[in-house]
Image (cartoon, rainbow, N blue to C red; front, top):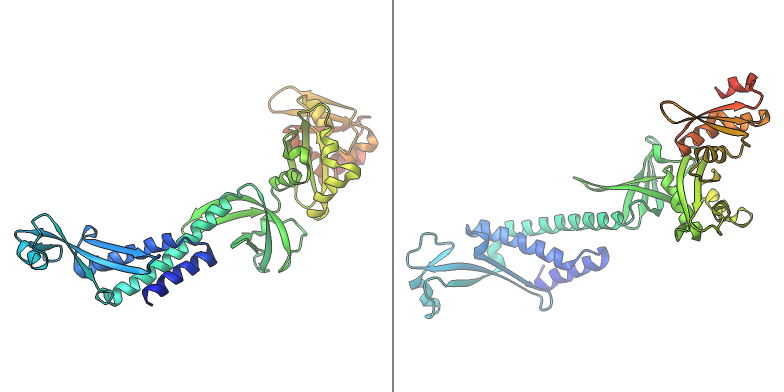
Length: 357
């Protein structure tokens, strides 16, 4: 590979992979300097590597200090020998000797190739980290490239990067196939020895929050605030909202006309039910709203250790308040932060109490 081919290759890498040619040039220069250091047994300060992509020139110089008495023939040159090159040389000057590429030998060439490859890998990893870090705690769209049926993991292509969606971060019952486009939430981006590791999820509550921000302008601009989210992915999500503007109904804004806004999110989540409830600083009011879709007669905040409350509902609403396998009560507790004892208005549980327990 001649000089022009080298610079052309670096320029092509920059265009195709987005890796800075200057970054790679610096890697090549360092590799050549290391090779010269080994071959000529000199320190780096005695080596000059100049690479100019504009003129496609590649020049390596050995720098030798002019001295009266030579102690190291590699890094020093006698005043007598220096004057043979140029009469103006004096002790303390540096003599620059241009080296031919062939002088580097096979080791220099191999070292340069290795560092270039390593530099490409490092640049790609750095590029991936920077790109994905900017999307941390955001929603990104990926394309399913591989499904590992044995482990249950799914590989997604996100831009130029690949990320793994683990089985435990997938929505139960959701089947993804190669070629499917799917929205995921970037939980975190960590640096590892093998490069950046992107942690993504379809079950994280943050996915629902970001979807509301994308779908509801009032949430995006901060007029409507999402105060809490509790989610059992694939089944049900409860989201508590409030408004900074008394003229804006936070529930209505999130649900949309005829349920149009929340319907878009439900569809994206594969039919997952979403309860949008009003947040209140009054715990009793908040708990009553959070038990939706059940009607609540009263809520009593219990004194003592921990945050506990007792909610009373009409007898015919008990099963609805508790939910299938206790789901509604469980999500209400997570949303409000209270342990909630749900009781029927009559005080008689019967079979429903046994079912709830």
